[in-house]
Image (tube, rainbow, N blue to C red; front, side, top):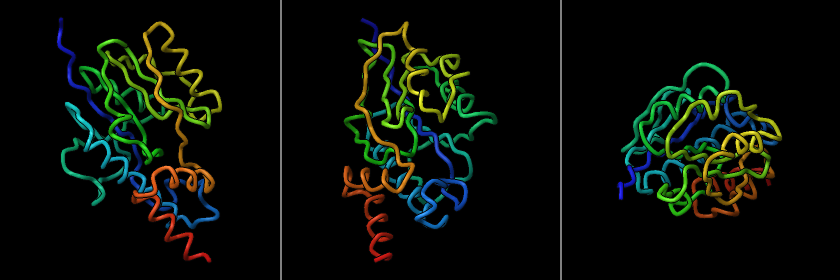
Length: 207
């Protein structure tokens, strides 16, 4: 039996700078507050990835790393182009099984991210907004992502259709942080994280 190669964990993210991230949180939050929430979400996500068994941990970053980046990560810049091209390029940098997530689901856990491709060829994690929060490929093929319409209500369905010829294992449906309502629900799902603490401080300051 051929041994399964270690999985590369990919996190695609933007540097949490005001006006560049989580703009749909404004209002009720200011651009600076929205960036602070984004930074907390990213820090929680990277902490979980750091605690998940992996062959490599790679942050595919638009911007510059900051103090929120833990040790043990390779940092590679995002390529130019639409999100489909940037996701495709992230997978193109892998020579074995890979699982990609974003910075919008700080409620993830090491258990969710510990995947085994021994009996499947792909993993798919749908998001409640119609997109997807995770995509895993046993043999990374950038062509499976190029041309998929991103940030649309049918993004998840279109991406899932690209995987129709593969053996796919479904991951739980999660909620992305896009709006203030999303933030409250996600914080409730991970009350011990930095994201929940930051949201609680901002909410308390408005009372």
